Length: 246
Image 1 (cartoon, rainbow, N blue to C red):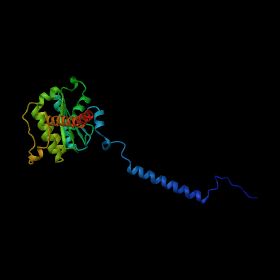
Image 2 (cartoon, rainbow, N blue to C red):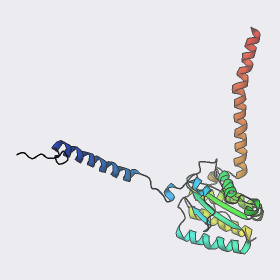
Image 3 (cartoon, rainbow, N blue to C red):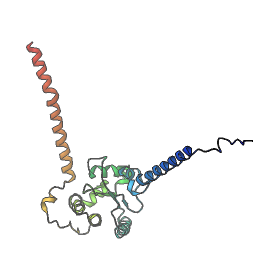
């Protein structure tokens, strides 16, 4: 008498081979996904938008570019905490790899100041130092009292010399620490430590101040407007002249 077996108990060699192939392909796909997938968290995926959405750092620095070493971080924490306790002025330091949402570091620093301190009362004695590593530029934004206390000369010098010169040399820690020292000295009404010595003056001449940036943007807007007028108005005049002749 023959004994019948259920379909589940009968597994053909073809089915077994197909199952092994499918299993192997699934394992390969999972391995590739894990290998090439970007990390889910951490500074590698942080962007300028994360900085804008987060509150001001309790540690006085937001090192999104991950360029500040342990010594610099400790120095910033101690020096800026002492500055705030002594004078009431708070300075935050922000490093970014790049800025894409704004024209430059100046616009981003202004927006960040407004995000972190939305009212004049909150932001009047606050300052933010921004360093953008890939673009080799930096900026300082601050409330009315902060700007008045530091002074335009120091602010311009920090933005056009300290931050871009050291950033161009990829000395990001020096860019931040030297800038903070000059700002703190200005707030305390102490002698200015001075800007870094620069050997290549031609390179420095390429760095732009905030006023120069705004001026260039205004000139660019005017030029574009003129081109638009030429592109649209002149053909219309020619068309009406042609119709009038007919």
